[in-house]
Amino acid sequence: MPFIIAIDGPAASGKGTIARALAAHFGFHHLDTGLLYRATGAKGGDPVLAAQTLTAGDLARPDLRSAGAGQAASRVATIPEVRAALVEFQRRFALQEPGAVLDGRDIGTVICPDAAVKLYVTASDQIRAVRRAAELGAHVGDMLGELQERDRRDSERATAPLKPAADAVVLDTTELTIPDAIARAIAQVDRAR
Ligand code: C5P
Image (spheres, rainbow, N blue to C red):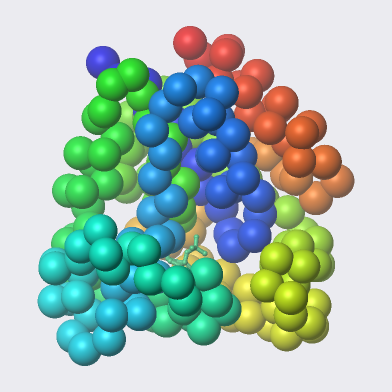
């Protein structure tokens, strides 16, 4: 059985950084599932058709990291048929040997409910806005509004809302350095292996 690590949390919580570091440390595959929704939103046209016909090329578009692409992603992510179209790819990805790390919003709750390790990575709104502003070269105030709007939409949607799985370990990175956050995540995985 491959070893699955599910990482969920709000935008700019540090979950992507932690997911990449865990994958490198343990030699596992890594999937940033937000990219699937960003690519679906960026494709334009009928979002259900866009999700059903996603290709590797769609995931490599240069503009997918922008705040606008994040907003478009969170809008198409509320559509149940869009989510359904992306489930099988994510589950198949998760079953690769020797293991996989998937990060997103619903990995521990919906995509991989039997994951060996579930982390819910979070941080204060303020620090997340500071981090995202530094990343995108934007204003902290603009980023704060953008993140809060997206988190609200992600948490309040009816299908697969953002929330910690009942058996997730919460990792609050507000006051942690990146190496400390990674070390704690590695310790959680070591405990489960
Ligand atoms: O993680 P990232 O910020 O790239 O995600 C962009 C958007 O995609 C999120 O705000 C959310 O609406 C959606 N998403 C989702 N489920 C996932 C991953 C991302 O609904 N597993």
